[in-house]
Amino acid sequence: MTVGILPDTGDGNPYLDVVIRTGMGHARNVILVQSADAVIAVGGGYGTLSEIAVALKTGRPVYGLLTWKIEGVRACAGPEEAVSLATSAGHPSRPSRSRRDP
Image (cartoon, rainbow, N blue to C red; front, top):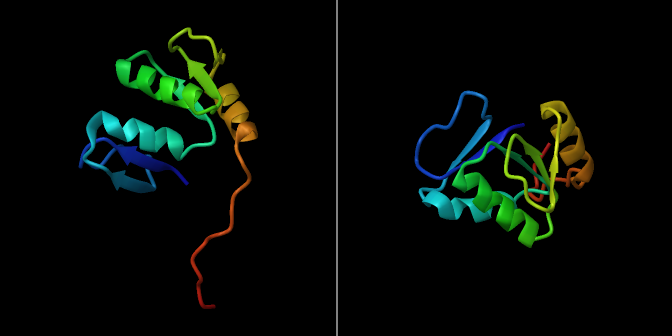
């Protein structure tokens, strides 16, 4: 499942299964990183730099694809490597907290 935590009230991209519209601009970067077990940084914009900083400050591993060269960011050769490393660094899925009647 792909969840998009958006900075605005738009629809995101067609690859998102769940869209969370925050309307918070760049402040949503903290929500995004705090909701992740690991971060894959793609590209070199300042928003990406902000997400990297929050991730490193909160102890989350960061895997990079053509992004900032910063201590603590592990450069990856391609998306497959980044996803594999991030998935390995993550916690196993937790059971749902909501009760559902059969």
